[in-house]
Structures are given as C-alpha cells and as structure tokens.
Length: 253
Picture 1 (cartoon, rainbow, N blue to C red):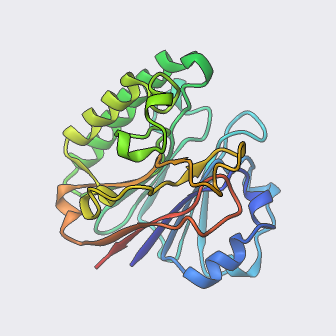
Picture 2 (picture 1 turned 120 degrees about the vertical axis):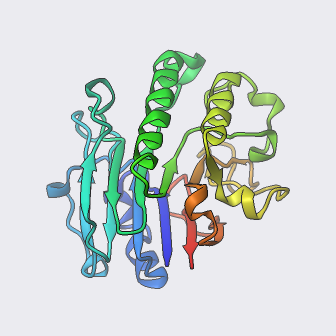
C-alpha cells in the first residue's frame, strides 16, 4: 500500500506541471496534498483522478493554504480541522479514519520572516500534538503526513549554520518537533535512513537551489509505534518537479 504526500504549492498550477502524469505513473492508494490554494469547485480534475474519492479542506481566505486527500478506499469518516476555531480557518488539517489507522494530512503554519508568527506556530504545534495523541488514545494507530515546516536536525538541511534562527530551523520549532516525536511518533524516513545526507524535499526558487540541491527536508510521514512494524519503506522523490516541494512516500505492508 503506497501513500504519497506532496505540497503542490497550488493544485491548479501543478495540474499543468505533471501532477496527472505522476498520479497515473505511481497510482498511490492515498494521495495527500498540501497548499492546494483552491476550493474543490474551482478545480477541474483530470481523468487520472477518476478512481479516487476526494476530500478537501480549504482556507477561508481565497487562494491560500488548504489540504486535500484522494483515496481509493472510502474512509470510515472524515474530519476537517482539529475542532479548534483559532486553528481551523486555514484548512490545514484533514483526518481520514480507516479500519486499521487514522491518517492526518497537515500543512503546518510557517513561522515567517523574522519569526513574526512563531508564537502562533508554537500554539499550533502544541494543539496538533495533543490532537494526534487524542486520536491514538482511541486505540487505533495514527499516521500523519505533510509539510511540517521544520527541518528537525542539521542533517535535514544543506546549510544549518546559516539558518539557525530562521523560520523552519529555529531552536523553538526544532524542540517542538522533538517533543512530538518524544510523545510516541516516529519519523519514518529517518527510521530507515538515519544517516542519509542530501535528502531534501523543499528548495527555494532562488539561486538555483534545486539544481545545486541546497534544500531542506520539511515534509514527513510520521507514525505511532502500533503501525511502525507495517511500514516497509519511506522515500523522497526529488526527481519529481512541478512544485518547490517534491513528493514523499510511505509504503505499508
């Protein structure tokens, strides 16, 4: 069973930059998208999406943020947001329940330049961690995926010293992600590839960053211990273009 997560930086743009061909080639059982920047009724999906059930959580602000999940199997239930008004206006969380697990697609807020949104980001991180733990407390394993907007350790970005106090690599954001993992979640890519360098999922559009692989690993699949034994692989697909992010995958046995 293949799950794919991809921040598409605007689904309407990415539909013209290889997304349909990617879906046709990879045929994932579940496709989670972030930063869709559109409402469902604004998007004319191609034939490649014909075998999927689609679920959307769009931001109140037009053309901003948003998440979507396309799944071959009809889920048991779908939840939009975390049930917290202050955090649910930007369409950042979409939860699907399946017989064997909860799947949470997330687009974490960016702390922004000069960390001006960091206080809100810290509130968000706490709320999201508690939300995941509440799902796990139901007795069913949890998988979360998406753009977490943090490079956890120095190995997860090309220039850690230059970015120490920048959004996505601040001490506060890194410590918060450590706390999330410490609460019982596993970074699946590092589970399989703990020492792999140069493995990134996002590159700036500036300075030929992607060509030179000056990137960050900020897109994740995380799982609770109860399903870790079923995880067969986790991968990053830097050769897939169409966005400033590339897809990341999880394979369940």
